Amino acid sequence: MKQISWGRTLLAAAVVEIGVVVVMLLLILLFSPRELGEGTAYIRDTAQWVNPLGSFLFCFIGGWWVAQKSTGSPLVSGMAVGAVNVVLDLSLAAALGSAFPALVFVSQGGRLIAATLGGLVVSARRGSLSQGN
Image (cartoon, rainbow, N blue to C red):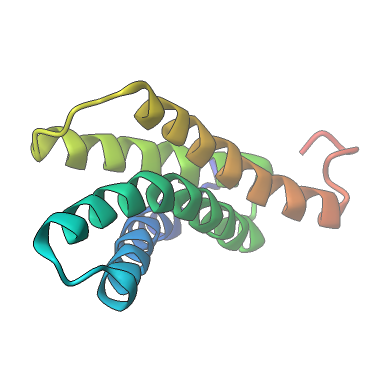
């Protein structure tokens, strides 16, 4: 837990959430059918795919970004971004009364894996994997 930049970690986790919402809104505004029934189905279907895929991408970038500036283990820093993002996302979903189907938990696992991979990339570039850092 030492040498994790918690400020950067919290910022990255929040930006991931905001980024995914912005991408979803842009897709909905640009491509959603104008008819109410079709538009509602499009929004549901878009969220079902964009949320997990966008979260994976943004978590990877967030984990990489935090790990870049890490003075400790980049791998642990990336993993921290994923863990904080998972807690943030599940907390927001619970507060909004959302259901938790199996896909939600797969998506959460993907977030953790992606952010950890971002830290892993930084570790590999620093050569710290072979040193045990």
